[in-house]
Amino acid sequence: MKRNIPCNLEFRVLSEEKREKIHEASLTILETTGVRMTGERTLRMFQENGAKVEDGGIVKIPRIMVEEAVRTLPREVRLYNRDRVLVNSMGPERNIYFGSIAEQLEYLDYKTNKARRFTREDMKTMCVLQDYLPHIDFTCSVGLIDGVHPSVAGQIGFIEVVRNYTKGIHVVTSDTNALKDIVKISQDLVGGKEALIETPIFLYYAEPIPPLTHPWESNERAIVCAENGIPFTYMPYCMMGGTAPIEPAAALAQCNADVLVGLVLSQLVRPGTPYVYGAMPSVFDMKSTIGCYGAPEFHLNVAASAEMAEFYGIPFYGTGTVTDSKFVDIQSISEIEMSLFSSILSRATIVHDVGLLDHCRNILVPPDRGNFAGV
Image (cartoon, rainbow, N blue to C red; front, side):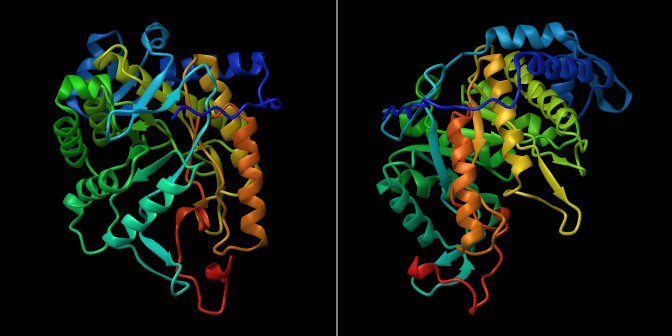
């Protein structure tokens, strides 16, 4: 299922000179300020390969480590479905893939037009619906099912998606053990560890904690993916004015530095590990303390981050067709349309969170507002 949406038009946020400046600023951050890391294995790995580890887990990474990691990165990331058929080819061809989420904390029931807790049966509905939609290329399994113990929610969610979905699968888990179980399930499904490395059937989503903090849990998930040949994205969700500088250029440099840490870690564990650049530099809303999904600055910064991914020659994990509105209304349709337009014209390879309302918070809809069933 190789699709390519040709882009006869495109826009650029960054010039070549600006991309170089952001790259150099990120290297300066890594070399002089450093990042905070936890996890004995990760710290030892960085130290043994040339990084300087200081008190408090501050790790200063020399540019030569970054340059070597970029050199060993594969330029194409392939994702297969449950039948080991190629469904997503992410690389220089500029294929663009759109996907949503298989489960959320809450579900807007199309039968009653009311929001309620998400159930296991709803996951089947979401997967079957997305499987039939021709322009949806993947779905995200997150493990947020009501009535299921959190320790196994991710594993059960993944199994349900595999049962009901024939396209690409992206996985998010609440802990490392859930990821390890999903890796084992996938290996059993395709015929062993080497078979999964050859034809990975899911892409993993991990995150550091901006600004410049890489906890044990995030590092371990990246290591598990690299050890098993699982493609993954390591996406900082930094908010300007909150967890990142208010100026876009400085926020992009900070985000880029965090992405480069995940990139280096992946290649230290296993050179050639497929890696996808991801970043979500948004605006911190001081009144509600959320990161805005519909803000123009958010999508300009995401487009700029996609250009940084192109600078390194790797695919980009983008965000689009999202809104801060709680309802299907004029605001939501406008924000979804404009973010979709931005995603298509930018350098994004993957566009996730398609169709999410209320900046992914999913508040219950009052009975007198909205009419989802009639849309």
